[in-house]
Length: 245
Image 1 (cartoon, rainbow, N blue to C red):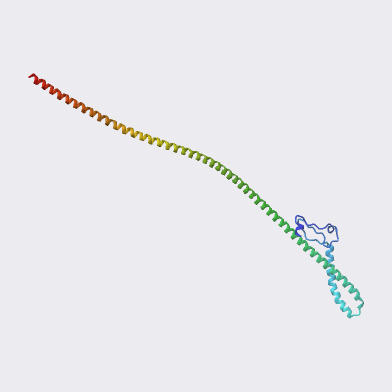
Image 2: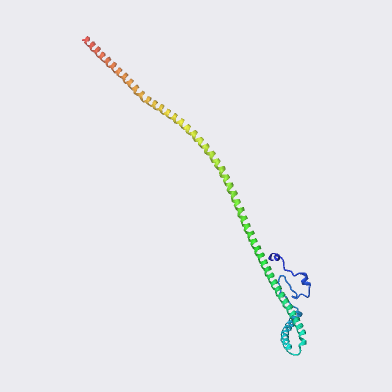
């Protein structure tokens, strides 16, 4: 029943609105529901029924007394009156029960309607909260997408820089390898030059000694020749001197 009244106001059927003899009188149900109102005629009728009910009780007591007396001819009338009173009493009771039942039904419908409105408000609030949460999650997803895109760009840039660095490292390794080879060749040349230099130095050291030895030999020869010449000259002079005497 709650699902039937959600989002709509409770309306009394048109036949009930247009019927002036409705025992509940005018009932208005809308945004601010009102309790059922009774006409003056209905109030007087209820009072009359109550009075008749009380008098009927006394009449039934008198009826038993009349049966003991001579006026037994009034018994059918009293029974008819009692039956009418009972019928009126039952009708009034039925109306009261119907009225109370309808009031309870209206109260139940009003409670259900209020609960339905409250449930609808709660659902709308929950939906609004979920929409806000979805919006927040969407913002977070967009932020994460942006961060992921930034990370991807950084990774691509790092990969390019790595390739460049590897290429430069390969070039440097090739250059170092060439320089090492050149250095090895230069080391060989340097060793050769050092050997030649040592040879030349040794040769340069040995030549003066040889020249000195040769010079010493020549000097010795000259000295010997000079000494021999001096001896001969002395001998010749002595010979000449001897001849002169």
